[in-house]
Image (cartoon, rainbow, N blue to C red):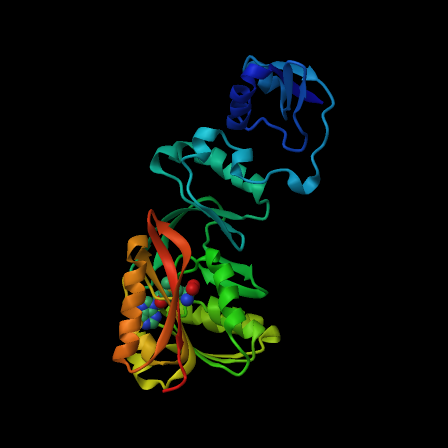
Length: 335
Ligand SMILES: C[S@@+](CC[C@H](N)C(=O)[O-])C[C@H]1O[C@@H](n2cnc3c(N)ncnc32)[C@H](O)[C@@H]1O
């Protein structure tokens, strides 16, 4: 089996070349011997044509599941450093690629496919747009579709990334909230999307959830998702298609309100007014403003005649110094 033999002092540089040309054989491990490093390659002739010394040598195999851990194992440093976040949603990989790397998109796509062989579509991430908070995505490799089924916390979530919001990085947060919920609770979920929170909670707890969503496509998928998961849901989910700011006026108080508020929308007063015991209110806050955010919630509680304790938790970073946060509000029951 062939490998490239290179002096130790040139090893880093040659490794980058091998990654760039997609020549590195990830199934075998490189070895060091004295002053030389041997890199396993998939094509000796091509390596030779690059002026590299190619030798016949047997190198140890890597364990199957540890072949590649991340894109840095597969791509040259100058590319990896400029790539943004990579998420895998069902069988769709979504990656942030800056404009100046668009002429290297082929090798990025190849690396993603090696890392995630199950992926059938690779899409380039744009920004969230409009009131439905849908992300602009461009398919750069694979099947021309943005619909998929994602597995998370024991539920299946059908998503159409072309027309609804979904963030797989909130998986841990959804689990955290589900753990706080107790059997028997009545829960209100404004801004419910395709129901990721509702499904995860209903999977784990015997509760009644009322979910409100405005985007008609998200509502359609919400119903499909209830159907997809019905065999293992302990809780019940009712979906209301409508505007949170109108629908909630007609609804009573709930034990718990969970508001995954869209960016730029202020639903604090309304969501709190519907919370008998607990409110989990999400917002995007600069790190210097977290105390002020907490004070604003306490002030709103006072205004509504509620005595509350408020803890604000950073959930994910949104942009430098700005976080998606969750205010966990507990309404004291002695009123
Ligand atoms: C940040 S996303 C959260 C979606 C979902 N909860 C999740 O975590 O994936 C906000 C959702 O609120 C919906 N939305 C925006 N304005 C709304 C309104 N006035 N009434 C109801 N839903 C609204 C959007 O369509 C979107 O699905």
